[in-house]
Amino acid sequence: MMKKYKVCGFSALMDAEMNTNDTEQASDLFETMMNSEVYTHGYIADNNTGEVYCYFNKEVDGNGVKTEYWTAFA
Image (cartoon, rainbow, N blue to C red; front, side, top):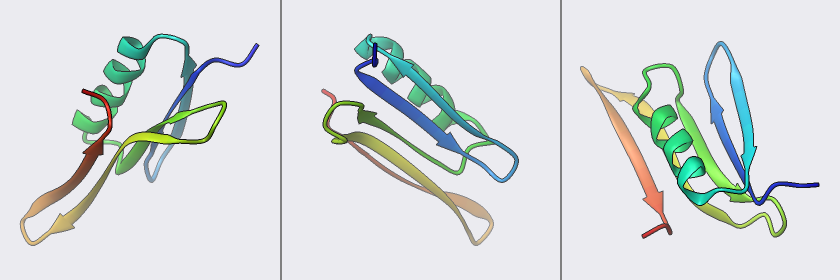
């Protein structure tokens, strides 16, 4: 049986994908990846429709890191 949410994170060393039916767990996994220094981008998507619920993208900007973030979750 397919889970409702797919949480994905991508880095130079490793990509991760986790699937869950729980909205709070999906959000927590996503936040952990976003706050990690390992993952450079990631998202939560609906496994049934492919709709993206939130994403982040990090890139080096001068002496810091610029993070782009968007969410449809309240």
